[in-house]
Image (cartoon, rainbow, N blue to C red; front, side, top):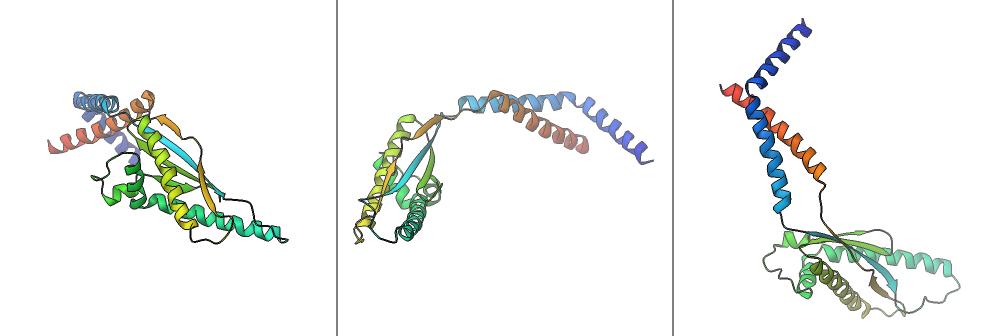
Length: 209
């Protein structure tokens, strides 16, 4: 009995879609064309990744308990790496970096400033910074500004330290790549979205009739 009812429901659905095939296909085509138009005409953007390396100024302190010294030094490096990550999440640091790079940040809210950089600690001595820009030149300027501002903040901390060896930050050359989306991925995603929307539009139209 249930199988019979299911078969009848399936035939009814197929009949609905045959009667509204033009509407369904129109929705799918509009979504596919709209998706390609969006990705074709949207502004060019670049993704950048910058690695900041935590190091020390001077030589390591001499001690007979060198193993313990290494252990505490590693802990200090890890804590400082976390500090660098928090700096890059702070709107004040972001505003300083953008200003140094010659970019006007006055139109950005505090929330947007806090999301400009994605910073994460990869190890006790490496912090990864990623961000997006509209041009490769801007990405290079921002990368240089990030290093300069972080180095400036580090020097401010170093002034209050009495140790011979304190922190310094050096950076590798940034990796800058243009953002590209595969045409096949766009087509598949657009088709799925178009079919989903087309299904519900057809069902809503049938219900209203």
